[in-house]
Length: 341
Image (cartoon, rainbow, N blue to C red; front, side, top):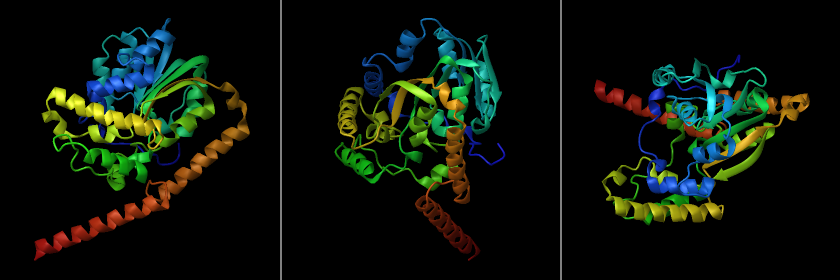
């Protein structure tokens, strides 16, 4: 591509800290929502129902340290894999761990990637699409690169863009948090700070809310299984207090949090944050030149406006970014004057 794209130059932000799905109770909750069996993860479900015969050639998007493709090959789900990432450090780690497995790695920016038609019969997305800026373009490329009878399997964050939760959701998160004892209550609980997110990783959840819409343009989603998270994710992720709570007590309070998560998700008071879905390419859309041009024009205009706003997608967010920049400038000037005096 001939335009500047959003990439993350610092791979150190990945695989850090404790997330909600590190807790066994949460994994059971997710499994139940994904597969109807609290002891069956989506990978096992996909293997049993779609991999009676292994796929010939898979593509893994933004592979990170390579654990996804290693697992799929080790489980006999796919014979060989092509995988890529932008981070050279993560690719080196993946290459080191692959052993004799038939995996080919290369480095690229996902926003400008291209493949031959019908090159793969499996595409695997695990927490990659929510880092993609040109999500429409990539969805079209995936549709073209996947064979007619190929499969896209997805497990990803589909929640609010850059974790900018709507007012009602944030209110409910705080209400549930206040109901917890001090030993479990997340403190401080701070809404994700947009300027910090843009600075630390401009790709994080950049268009997470557009994943379903964009993929649906080019794929038929055969089945979709969401697993909430609208309450529990924020309360259980990066909460250092939980390490000091006895296991039995911790399980009790995690169950309480998940009860609220289920209630508010089912009543649609909070959006689902994570989804496991399986899709097949809709090749017919690729011959509709007018539709393809329209979709891409919308995306290109969106990104052109965002570049003028320093990488954010609304005037309100731009004002927040500029206010933060102004505040930091004033603080820095004040500190310099203190040093001089």
